[in-house]
Length: 386
Image (cartoon, rainbow, N blue to C red; front, side, top):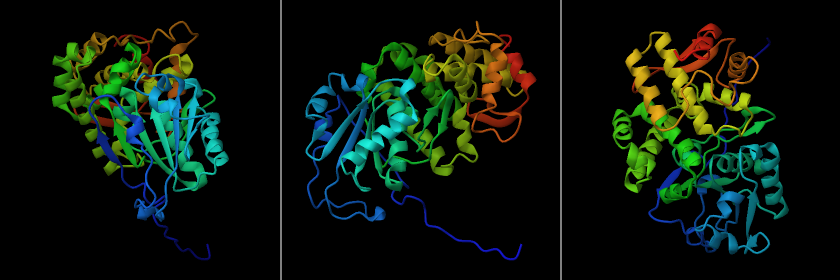
């Protein structure tokens, strides 16, 4: 080597270094929330924006656009436009969490001559927030993105923390970036519109957060099962806000997931593998994560990290909320050699740096370890209930 020198760069995409999270009571009035800003409103100077009017591209899906409290906002658009704003309604579901959807968002923004300081707004669950943010991160090298999460999963997890992504072929979230929304508008009342499956899926992420960071929230969940399942708003508001605060604290200390943020993947390595092997969209993300938490608890016990009592308590709680806790999930147990297929999928996980599988395991509540695990140990918890 003849010589070496270093070039220092400023932070990528200035203006995306913070997120404002706003909580609202009652049903969402999106028309009022996004009332046209007047010319001359001060823009975000950290992004080099001028005193001009921002336009918005609103991205949602067919499920959300048909909700009673969202329809007035949708109907304010004629042929997909309202003033300078644009509405794009995508198909709903994991099968549409694709690069094609991302490119459709970008093309729509280009066709309507959007510029870099305009705003991409994702209104929906985790699929919509992920693909909208990925599109915003790519559009002219970075546009502003905001979210209105409409599912419990998006409120407590997907919309918080800056991860964007889409699936590729049968690989879960393998294309993505770190690109946080500027503003998150949270209306907990949206939880009342969810199907039982969607609600349970989102609640899995809330339980995960409690296990990782909050003994008090864990106790609240254990004693408030009936209030949670009946969707009592004050209990859910407490859980949602505590989850957001917990995740925000972790993300602030490790935005790009180099160390402690990996803990948030508790249950996810098993869960993502299940989603992949079952076929993306066949098992909800939350149901897969809940099953993964059960497998991680069993593995933690087998490796003598936690007690049998702790493992049994987690499995019992998961089962009481309706999640599967068997060694093999019903969606894959009839496949040929499903355990090996799951292990192979786990090895494709983004967190792995070696031939072994990196897993998030626990000694107890709020006592978490990140460790490399060999195939044989994983196989044991995919072959029996222990």
